[in-house]
Image 1 (tube, rainbow, N blue to C red):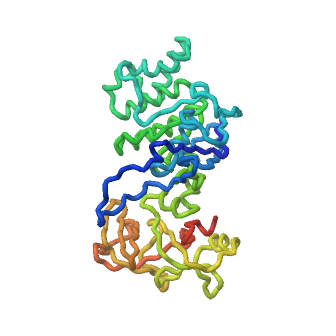
Image 2: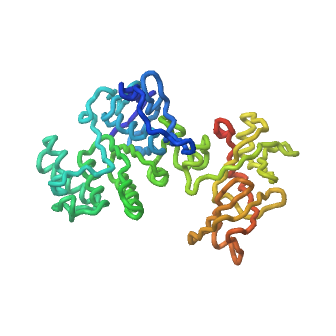
Image 3: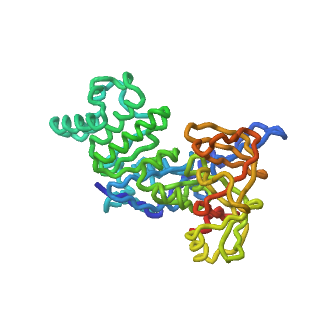
Length: 402
């Protein structure tokens, strides 16, 4: 198997002549809002920068997930690794070999696409055999690999069927099987579960986790679904507008987001954000002031801020819904009004309006007793001191780490 190393990789799509000419647009009414930009990609004299200064070293047999919103450059990065997109600048290594100018078929990689890409006129067996026939694999070896892949993926009973007679999940298993029979050094997966319904996605996530433990290859997986990223990846690469925002384990990016984008992108429901102030109390300890409440931070956060000699300042205070508790000690309670109460079974999700800020609080149903938390109820709540994040109001950077 192999490592994958990207050094200062950049992808620029040149502006075409047609794009440089002014386009005729439908006249917009004065009261009609302008269409929001879907992303904020850099535009230079060379063209649109789809991926900028991408640096990553993927270890042998590691499972790395590229995640981010549509248009962030994650699929473009995957296609550069595959050789389907040229690299504008930078270096790409698979193992110790520089592969910038190596054709896709000579990179010893395999790719699983979003739309299955199966041959409809071939049986499942023939689809699995096809890449091996192209390599002129001996019949006995080909049969062994096909049977082994079919057993791993649980599709042995479907080998004589055509793709049209399979469900979406079964087709995706065949597509994965066709990739793994080649025994590639690197297996690339481009949003392979996005066409499946929620139940099938959950099942296939579990199948991919099992698959990973049974085959010896390096995985690079692209998704826009942060749940997939958190459950599948050894490490996660979070991207936005063609740039890497943070690289880390699922737990690292969840517990220590480097900026507000990562903080709100990772986690469901997303992190709540409040306008506040970072202050030092009478004891010289860092605390956050939100509305009329003042909450002293935990010792590890005190140390992180002290080590950086962080000054008192206006901040954006981040706290996850599961780290908010109702009520609290005097002077630490933020007040608000319940707008919506969603029963989720084991918990209730409260949508609370607090002086112009909307936030979500997750309350375990076992903690409720007979308490009424219907819409219109006034509530007080406080934050777990060890789970508060303080972000710079201008840059969005986490003041503990950046």
